[in-house]
Length: 410
Image 1 (tube, rainbow, N blue to C red):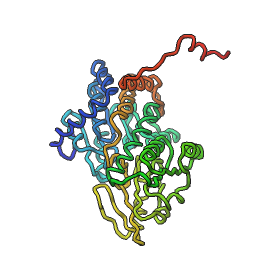
Image 2 (cartoon, rainbow, N blue to C red):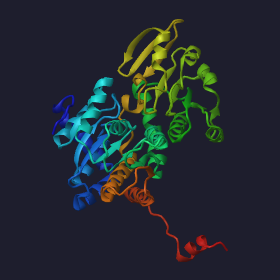
Image 3 (cartoon, one colour):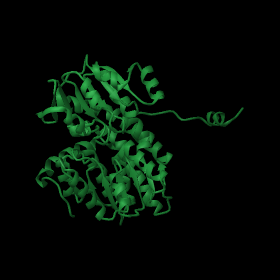
Image 4 (cartoon, rainbow, N blue to C red):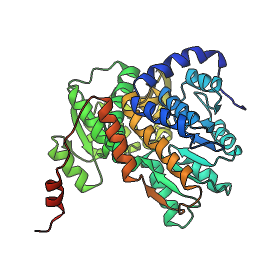
């Protein structure tokens, strides 16, 4: 298949890493085994724009077992694991991804996936889906993995521009409550520590945004001994953060005392010029939201008299007054730019949702309405049941009397 990756010779290491992840993703292995028998994607082309990680490769294997022809590009210029990309090419996937792409190369790769005219699209951030709309493509349907992507697709739907059925995988309980909270929480902290080797205990750790991702980051930072501050615009979420034991304040105030800053809002310009001007010498800036717009990197550069790379993922900005601010991963997703992304054990649930929703679209064969829909409840519940079984946990079942009681108004 047509492809463009950094180095095909990396496939041997890529196979080791993908096999490592696969052993820790039993939920997806069950789905793959079923797909190998039913072949729900026989004759169908699937185009995906996802972080090209070892976990994504396990998803690709499951879809391939189901008979799909596959094309894949990265959903972030810095998140591709080049050895994994090489291994996927050796397994027959048309991959267009390498770490360190320019904006133009990133867009070209998305275009190459769409050139295959996929019947189903799997997306992470909605770049592939939005470009499919721009090209006038009408696939059977698609899925969206992230909060940011769902927000974009909801805006398309509000404007009456949604051209084909889409399923908000991000909003499945077995994705949002686990991937976003435990996955983002752990991998964000891991990215910061890998990049800097900083001790978090005793540090003032500022989390911008208290959605599921922010909850996870705050929880893990607290567990490592940091004093956590939460900034928010939503009064309900801010109240929740306060009752969870975190200090809540405006970013204007947090900027003066924070040691480490993490943005997880999905919005732009969360940390800007006036905040940079107020920060202490040595402050560390990281973003764990999908796009590199939460920390105003251009504004930071404009305020600095010099910039130098002091570690592989750390750029040190020297301000006019001599203070130094450290930006991690160029302001892109710190958990993927500076580490390996979410652990396999949590991604198995997200990707099982992706795979089963793709099967749902394939079985519908064009009968679904062109709207943004939730993951079917039976899929969400099945993923949870499979995850519990993989963990060796058992749960109770309602008796007929209990079911009747819960259904009775009396």
